[in-house]
Image 1 (cartoon, rainbow, N blue to C red):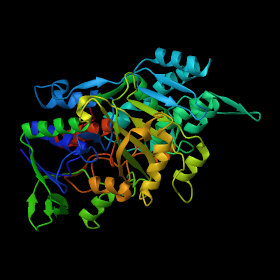
Image 2 (image 1 turned 120 degrees about the vertical axis):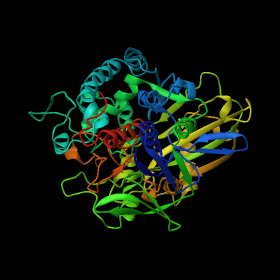
Image 3 (image 1 turned 135 degrees about the horizontal axis):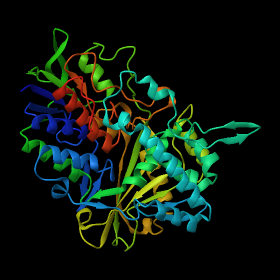
Image 4 (image 1 turned 60 degrees about the vertical axis):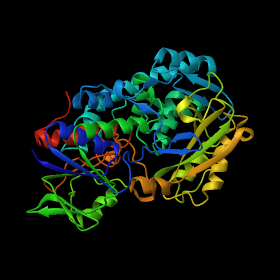
Length: 498
C-alpha cells in the first residue's frame, strides 16, 4: 500500500483518486480552492441554479465504468442520468431551423432532409459513416490506452477517410474540418453544424484536422445526456464515491512545490511550509502550474509531446427569467454565427478580438432543481472567446443576449437579472492561464493536438486531467483517471482497458 498525493480535485484527479483507493492505496487530495470539481461548478442566486462549466455529458460509459469499478452502487443510483431529446436544436444564419434527435442516425438524416432539403440528410449520414471509421481507428490510442512511446505516428496519418475531390484537374482529399464541410457536405448550414463541434472546443476548423470528425460522431453515436440538477451532481457523486473509498480531501490547501528524493517524487510541499510525504504524486493541474511546482526540473523531454497551453476560453451569461419554460423547448439550441469569417478571424486571427455576433449555445434545462418555482426559467448562454479575454465582459454579454433572442424572442422582456462569468473565473477555478480550456486529443496534424503522456520523466510523478493525455472533455477526464491509476497499480506495462 502506497501513499499517494493528488494535486487538485478536478474530475480527472478524483477519478484517479477513487480507483487508486480501491486498489488499496492511501490517497490524499490537496485542493487550493474550497470545493471539488475543477471547472464543473454551480452558481446559485435567488433560488436559481446554473452549471458554470460543462452542462451536457457525452459518452457516459466512461463514468459508468468508474462507478462499477469503485463500488457497489452504479452511476444511475447516484445521479439521475437522462438522455436529452432532441439532442440539439439549430438556428442557422439564413433562419433555417432543425431539431436533431438523440443517438439516431436515421432520425438525423430525416430531420436534415426535411429542414434543409435533399440531399442534405444523406450527405450528413454518409459523413457520419466516414467519421465512424476515424473513431474506430483512433478510439483506443486516443482514449483508452496510455500515450504511445512512438506517438509521432499518431500525427503522421489522417485517419478520416476523406472522399476524393477533383479541383483544377487535381484530385485532393480533405485535410481539415473546413475542407470536409466545403468538399463533402457542400451546404453552408451543414458546414456550420460540423464546425460548431470544433468551435465548442476552441478549435479553428480551418486548421483542425479532418479527424475532428470524431467529435460530432461521438454525439450522434452515443447520445447526449443530462444529469438532473446539473453536472455539478456528477461531480458531487464522484466526490462522495472518493470519500466512501476513504480518500482524504484537504480543501483550501495549496501545493507550492514537489518534493523529490533521488530523482523521484517523494511528496508535496504545502503553502504553510508543511510537507506531505508520498510514494507517488498525481498532478491534476495546468502546465504552467506544474512548471512552478517542479521549480524548473524538466518533467518532459525533447522527444515527448510538448504541453499545450490553450488559446481559447469561454464566456458564460446566466439569465434568470420570469415565466416558465415552454413545453417542448429544446434543452440545447445552437445559434450559428451570421458571419463565419468574421467569427473565425476574431477568435483565431493574428490579433484575436471579440466577435460581434458569435455562435452562441443556449441551454434551457428545465426541471424544478434549477428555478425557485414553475413560474421562472434558468437559461445559460455560452460562447468561445480568446483565453485571457473578457475586458468588456458586459459588452460581450449584450452580444450573446442579442444572438440568443433569435432562439428566445421574448428573452429581454422576461429578464430579471443576469450574471457574467469570464475567462478570469475559469482561471480562478482551474488555475489555467487566461482561463484556457483544453481540447480533446486528436490524431493527424503532425501531433500538435496531442497532449503529454500521463507519465513523466520524474519517477513517481504522473499527470491527470484535461491538460494531459487524452485531453479535455468529461469523457477524457474520466479516462485520464483510469489511465493514471492503471500505470501506478500495474506499472509501465499497463496497456489500458480491454
